[in-house]
Length: 282
Image (tube, rainbow, N blue to C red; front, side, top):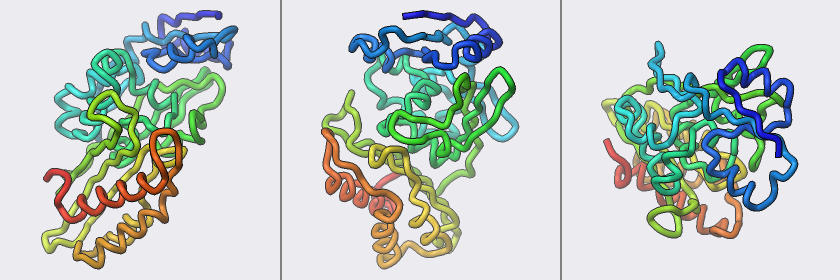
């Protein structure tokens, strides 16, 4: 194995350009598993962990910029994150155990592109944007546009995740994060979801955002159900139709952790409870 260590962001970009096939190392929580399994023999590693500039949570004009090297442990306790993006803080608290939370980073989690990334449904409903850098410049992608499939992204060779921008959402009428796994802690999810709901004074839906993880190769927003609900009151027929439309937005997978049928039923039950006000918080 060839091991490169960047001391500054500028050096990281130079090394990434020179070694476009190098695997970035942030917290290393998933990379170490692959290393122990022998899947990284002969590979080049690019260690980004010394980049303090990428380990900050900085206020922005319309929200906050979270550096790629910010850990789950910091996010779950940061006062601004708890105030404006509580679903993200809650999700980070379900990532593995305390050791994984202390080492794992938000940027590394995104770059790993696992369908079961716990922070992904919250990032989807908060409509986060991922800021990418390379030796020739920078660009920004909507969070959902980063993923190309299981363990695949649309990052170009030599491109690195610098930060994640979180816009301030208006205060929702109702919000929810839910992870369903085999046990209460340190479990990879069977499915998980995040939701934000805004209601008008007359009870009609002003806006709703709902996202599912561990259901498909990438995290999914329920665009068909969201569009149907906008402007409608949440009576029984409306909720029934929205729950039915969930299957139009996501086709659950079968794998070693769960079946397609279980995932679909669990997601529909939680979505129904969220819309009916039985699940989630005001």
